[in-house]
Image (tube, rainbow, N blue to C red; front, side, top):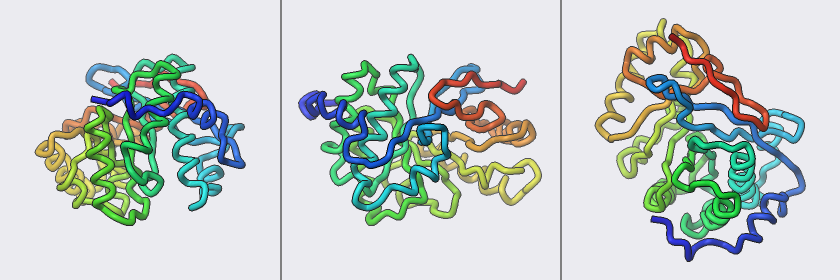
Length: 254
């Protein structure tokens, strides 16, 4: 359970929401993660965008070692604030920067205060680790995942299979969700080697008790092969493109 004593004063949320500590502004697009069994949105992932809809690289390229902590904190607050304003009732998936988290229980306080300020249920927040980030310590990441899960948040590893697969993390502290990288998904219905790799990942996650999200799915052929393997959570252009400051309604294949 989350201890309310670790909340920041709510004024910190307003400072972060206004972008204090950064010399550039940004906002979010939201892309659904769909549950094809129930034909519902499982979560919306918050994707960084420029104020006029510019792509994520235009914003992430401005993040430096000096402003990384402020950017990470402001990202969380802005995502929660916008999700609340849009009336999001599903889970909200937020990417986080492990190197910007010096101690999870302290660095989470602004997020908790934002959820309280904007009346967003903290049990619906998923924190996604982008696998490609160069981590200084696997132990540090495991401590973050453990702390987030203990506080009632769900956790996910993004882009699994992109070349930085961290099986040591999977063994030490399995996340709730594992998101298959789109390089594994692309044309998987035609590539037996990819099929073998993904089948192994599916078996691993079943035994670890977590779920898989197939992301970057663009064609029905990719979807039908993945669905035949028992995957039920999906994200990609086949279902919906990211909606700039809105919550797009997804398409569900037959």
